[in-house]
Picture 1: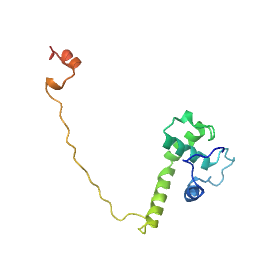
Picture 2: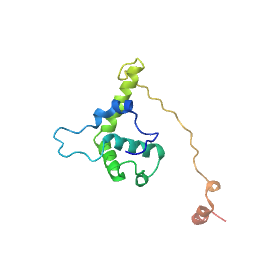
Picture 3: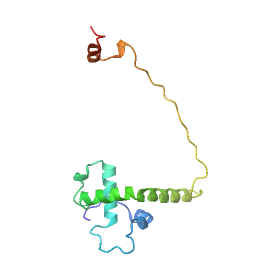
Length: 132
């Protein structure tokens, strides 16, 4: 890869997740693009908000990047990476790797109900016969 971007993985970050992105035994042909470059491209798109087709040419082609993004989404790789990173963060904070308790908090939000001819838009008033 040519340029380096702020969203690119550092060596330390790559080391934490690299084993999730290895080829399966018996993988016949060599990969054309390195998984780290694919991840860097995905992180660039995620952070910058650019369209897939506008991915800088320093990264692999957008079609390949999108292919792996969807593949890893479907096969649960992203969930595994998230679980691994969460466990590492918890352990570094001196906590158990997995939470022992979960709290769910719900909050009610008041909504205003629409009613009466005063809240209708002018076009709606005329259509319903409630208008002028």
